[in-house]
Structures are given as structure tokens and as C-alpha cells.
Amino acid sequence: MPVTGYGGQNGALALDLQHMNDFSYNPADQTVTFGPGNKLADLDVQLAAIDRVMAYGVVGDIGTGGHIAIGGLGPLSRLLGLASDQVVSVQCVLADGSIVTASEYEHPDLFFAVRGAAWSFCIMTEIQMQTSPPPSAVTQFQYNITVGRIADLADTFKKWQVLIADPGLSRYFAATLTLLEGVMIFAGTFFGDDAAFNQLNLDLIPFGQEHLGITVTSRVVTGLIHSLSDLIYDIGGSIPAHFYSTDLKYTRQTLLSDAAVDQLFQYLESADKGTLIWFIVWDLNGGRIEEIPQSATAYWHRDAIHFQQGYVVNPLGPVSPVSRQFLIGLNQLCRQLRPGIDESAYPGYVDPFLQDPLTAYWGGNVPRLIQIKGIYDPRNTFRNPQSIPPPPGV
Image 1 (cartoon, rainbow, N blue to C red):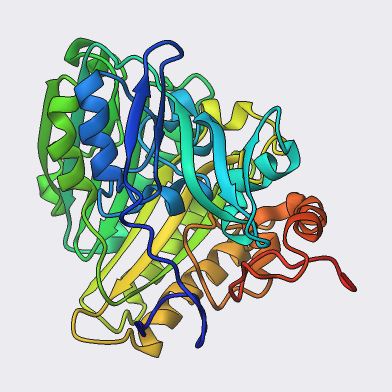
Image 2 (cartoon, one colour):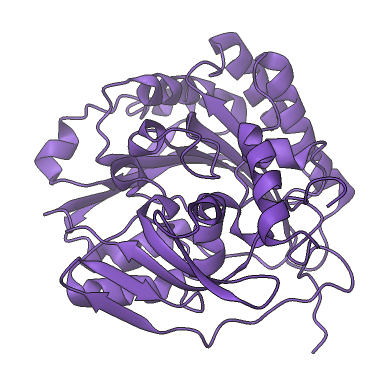
């Protein structure tokens, strides 16, 4: 059946795995095994039934196979790592039609590749992952900071950078900072009770500044993790139909200076967005993610302290060139303002306008991935415009 928007180019073959949605739990080793047809929302339901948790994203519409294949970030990632870090083994269909299991003990080179770059190497048909016990309490928070001018939010962003740069920041704390037209949303999850949450002393919220045209509304809810899943999904949102997104990595060494932040927010204030629906998300990383060596899996961005994710949306049709240029210009400005920031981007944010997508997505792991590609898919059966190629001459 012909479809559009899949495969990255005309004539690509896309496989529908939605019916591979089995799920089982092994209480002996506390692992779950499931098919890639499950969505993240399905994992929420299944894990709640056995009172276990894993780290993965909050957008329930996303499929587990694609999410885990490129890393998989979520609220528990600072505590447990990426979704792919919890993978114990993967059943794979290779380009020659053979079925193999990739794990630490079987096909370890393929196991390295599928944890961050799987779409270039195989079709994952079954995934085994380690689960963890749920935290005893969860505090979900959201602060909406409303302003007349976007530029007035620069000081809040400066405080956000101070917060996330603290090496002692609790890994039980997960948060995003989201900017929309006229409002900034500071939201996230603290895996502890309300009393422990209050001890964080978050000082980036500009309470009591109504005289500057700044107002704050808040929502803080404490409960059990599985009972808060609907609220988490509500904050996380769903996938828009027509959108363009970009991504940019910041490390502890490349956070912006105060002067650079002022210039960034002046750009966000004045630039033509080409649409009324746009938003920028800064997503906290670090914790357990950065403890794992960059050479341990294909996922490269262990050093990210936060990602800057830009979105422009057109509900009526394709995104305009003006909207795309707004996000491209945003990333160009950030690289100019802070030497050391490059094109590095989370591979889940597919951007056809990247100059060097392989390096942007997989960094220093690209040479090893190309070598592995030559072993398992020398004819480049599994490909898209930004996938790992086989070695030259293979």
C-alpha cells in the first residue's frame, strides 16, 4: 500500500510492525520481553500491572522499536539511563533473512550498533529489557510563566543553566523548559515526595514580579508513579501532523554566557516564525546517562547536559520555508554565540538540512558503525538518506 512520509525518500519500503505487540514478564530476572509493535503508552499499562518501571519517553504515540533504536530519553533517564541502556538482548532479522539474537554475549558488535543506530543494521522483532522497582512517590510539577515580551524571560533561562550545571543536582529530578509565544513552561518530575521536592529550592521561578508584567501559575501533584501517567502524558503532548524540528546539543562546557542568552532571547523575540504554532524545548540530560562511556553503545551524546529542541507546526499543510529558516537560524546563532557547539543532535530528531548528519547523530562512533555495517548489511539493504553506509568498496 503506497504511503507518504516514510522511508525518507521516494520508493522506500517501510515495514508495518504494529501487530508484533506481544509482552511478557520474567519475575526470575525481572526482565520484560516485547515486540516493537507496542507503543510507549502500551508499556505504561503493562509495567503498571506488574509494578515495575523503565526509563523511556512520555509521548505515548511513539513506537517502542523506533524509540529504543536511537537511544530513548525519558523522565527516569537521569536515574536509570537511556531506554537502550536497559536493553538486555534484541532479536534481529538481518539483511540476508537470518534471525539472530544480539546481546553482550552473542553478536556483541551488533548489540553495540542496535543500541543507538538500529535502523541501519536490522529489523528488531523482539526486545528484552531490565526493569526496576518504582519510586515510592512521584511529584509532578508545572509552572507557567507568562510575559509580555519573550526577551524578558532571558533571566529565567540563565537560572535554568545554573540549575542544570550543578554537578550535585539530584538524579531523581527530571525537567524541561519550554518556550512558546508569550509563555515559558518549567515542568517535570521529581521521584520523591513533596517535602523532598521542596528541598530542591528551585529559584528560577520569578514569583512576585507582576510589576514587570510577569505572572506565574503552578501545578504540583504528588502521588504514585503509575497513577500519574495521564498527567505526564498531558504535559508531554502528542505528535503534530505537519511539523519541522531541529535539535542541538549543549554540554557542561558549552552552556551559553549571560550575554549570549540575552542575544538568543532577542532573536526569539524578533525573528519571523512563519507560524503561530512554534515552541522550543530544553530537555535536561546528565545523571546516569553520562556515567556510561561513549564507546559502550552506538549512542554518542553521553556528554549532553541538555538538548535544545525546536518545533514549528502548520496544522493545515506543509511547513513554510520561513518557519524552517527560523529554526535553522536559531541553531546557527547558538553556534556563533558559543564556540564549541557543533551540529551534534539527538538522532530521533531527523533533520534533512544537517550538513553532516552521520557525525551529528553518532559522532566518534561513526567509523566503528561503518565497519559493523560492512559485516551485517554490506549491500546497504537497511537505509535512509541519513543512515550508516557500508565501507567503501564493500
